[in-house]
Length: 386
Ligand code: 3PG
Image (cartoon, rainbow, N blue to C red):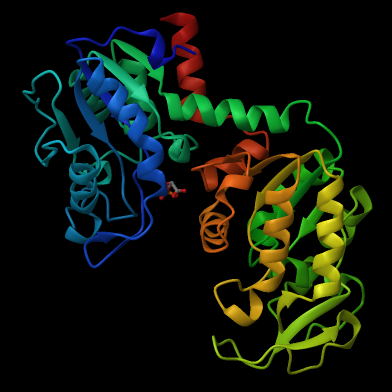
């Protein structure tokens, strides 16, 4: 793969595809992690004297239609402050843009353009015509073969990987190819069904697989225990058993339950074998969390995707905090990814202890599953064939 750092960008029109798909509330960015991760790339291109254009999607608007709630305007306002630069938001750019060296233009949400998600050739060529160099830096969207992530790269005069994409691929590659062992993976989330492929692949790669959240309830049920009214996929109990036959999957021995899903619900500690019909499991109990923390201490590689309890509620945040702290304090090479995981890391102030925090959600999972990311495959193809 050609790297942006290896190119001389002075005076060139550079189109950077970033993943600036950040949460926005009342016109303000509420979590800036992805923008912060993209800033060094943008600064580097500006410092090199390039004419810089940045593209991204935001949310999932109806394709081909402008909608203010999905506008990149809040991101542009953020960039203006962060870069102390007069950043311009371009809404009409497909027929060409005039810009000067050292200038930064953000192109409005690519999903407002028809053909974006279908990777249409016409739109891909229109993006490509805007630039001399296309920089793919959106690791978080690298699993999408869309016009602004993939098609554009096949038609641009030069296509290369930006520093963030390169760093993500390097860090995740280090964790997944020949990992230092034991390798422990944590997969939390609400449903087994939505994480089945990643559970399946991690069960063959990891030495221990820790399941958390709603996913864990299906494994508790697989032990023959009652899970009451907890989130649980009873039809996947056999699947859970099959995964347990392939890999060490520790199942909680104690849990925190409540009778309603609410911030003020009182937590009751119960043995996993004594959950009642009206109970809902919202967190690990301290015995289970501390046992996992011990396991984490022994690990040499840790992959973390998903909280183990309802960490947003103070009464059910302990399990995720104990595990998160154990990861942050461990000597292992640790990688974390996914929106909820990043929110938990922020909430408990664990950022400094994690070896690498990925900006990818779906892309992170697909990488861990061993899938080829189309935008990366495109860059490899371009590096081979020019
Ligand atoms: C993400 O948030 O995972 C990426 O930005 C991709 O977004 P998408 O799932 O809407 O394609």
